[in-house]
Amino acid sequence: MITYGRQTIEKEDVDSVIDALKSDYLTTGPKIGEFESKLAEYVGAKYAVAVSNGTAALHLAMLALGLKQGDIGITTPLTFAASANCLRYVGAKVQFIDIEPETGLIKTEEIEKHITPQTKVLIPVHYAGQSCDMEQIFEIAKKHDVSVVEDAAHAIGSKYKGKKVGSCSFSDMTTFSFHPVKTITTAEGGAITTNSRELYEKLLLLRTHGIVQRPDKAPWFYEMQELGFNYRMPDVLAALGLTQLDRIDKFIDKRKKIISLYRQKLSSLSNLKLISEFDYNDSAFHLCPLLIDFESVKINKKDLFQKLKRKDISLQVHYIPVHLHPYYRKLGFKEGDYPNAEKFYSQEISLPIYPSLTLHDINFVIKTIKELVI
Ligand SMILES: Cc1ncc(COP(=O)(O)O)c(C=O)c1O
Image 1 (cartoon, rainbow, N blue to C red):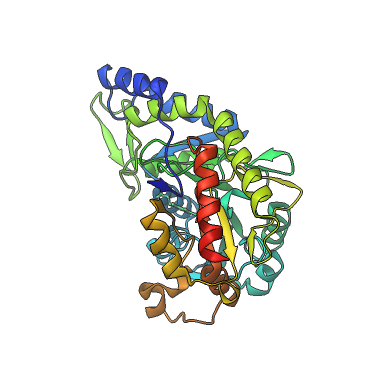
Image 2: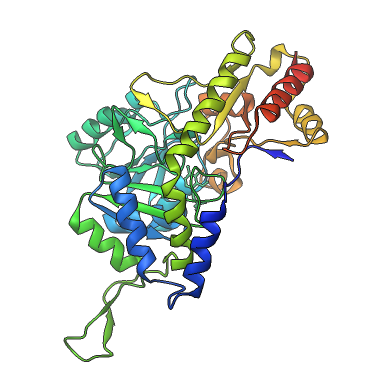
């Protein structure tokens, strides 16, 4: 089965995990610190905190900023639910802002119009791997004294204006996910990067129940200073993250080659187009979104998916706009609220993109889609 994304696990990953399994530590141990240092160095941030998944990373980021009931956070509807849910976890309200139809990224120029005294955080999502216009977003945030948390679940290894996403050059924190479909994986896993010592210390505290060791009081003594969580990443998974990080640039090169093949092969077709890229961006391409104008082709989206599945091509759609999920509808959102995101959803299918995809697979996917669509 050809899927839209999958992990690349090789001998060095297996060896690294086995070594960690045989060590004294299965959960927090030396691999966590090594992974955090390597990640911080890779993205060019001062600090990295490894956590259990990308959702936990977003939740901790909101907690570290002190978001609470009555506050408002701004994000995009074209994302995975977690980008908005993190606001709900802390009792804050979600203000969605529609997307640019060509890129799927939040409309930067709409952000300022929606900032109110209650707005406390902007959560731009680097959809498919391409960075939002962070310099501009950060400028708006500073003007209104609002924090910025980049949801970079798709964007490890991507660059914005020459700097790696995660360097937090234009944000307070950046969150990552290492789910198996992402560019590198730790099975489940995530991280937050920041350049702020204060936020870093808060994140460390909240990651582990809000508990600190107090050997100054007694050798066994610890105390819970804040209401935190168990959002730790196990050492065994950090060991996997370390060997994955060793090969991240190789993975990204392969992803870029796949994208340029798709671009070449699809460029002559007017009713099928790949998302556009800003020239100041260098995306690591977690996803390869293809927009199909279903009104002008011979098949609808449902039938296309079913027929592709019969050919062992199992694709996915990114995303059903978050405001259309029943939970968000119950909060008052409705169809028509964010027309660009809704149109994007109606047209989008995510083509397979992962390092072990072969040229034969790519040709087969393109040929099959062309036959079914045109
Ligand atoms: C944009 C975005 N944010 C957050 C997450 C949450 O990450 P995780 O699945 O690791 O909890 C995802 C996961 O797919 C995502 O795509």
